[in-house]
Image (tube, rainbow, N blue to C red):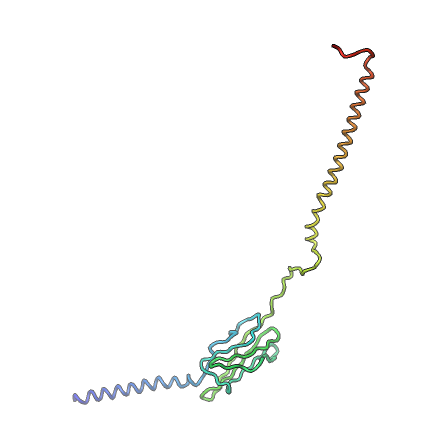
Length: 201
């Protein structure tokens, strides 16, 4: 009996090892047969203001150019593919020929080892560029009423100076009249003084 137990144990361990190996290999076969998208530039659902020169798709496994089909359409289903895609391992770069602003759809179809094609889409939106602010005045345009109002106070000091000059003239005129009246009063008093009277000592 002592010799049979080690032999049975070895047989059991071999059976367990084979079962584990089969369980690890079988799930990997379908995964290896199907490729999948891992990322893109622009990202799916992105909104971009500046149109990229090319679109990049990244996949889990290496791509076969012979079994890969890619289309790009923009608003109104207008084709926006700017040339032949360039493949590099699990990546593909697609030249982009943008049209009007709006939604764009990148559709891809990949071949697989089990014969079932893999299809998918990446969507992004090309937004219009920023419009100029309505408050910004173009160069060379005539000044606005606000600018004219700002320049208007420059005439105020001139008017004030003219008013001050007129008031000064009236002061001089009144001063001259007062002087003439004083001289006339002095002459009148001198005429009324009796002759021969002089200043008392």
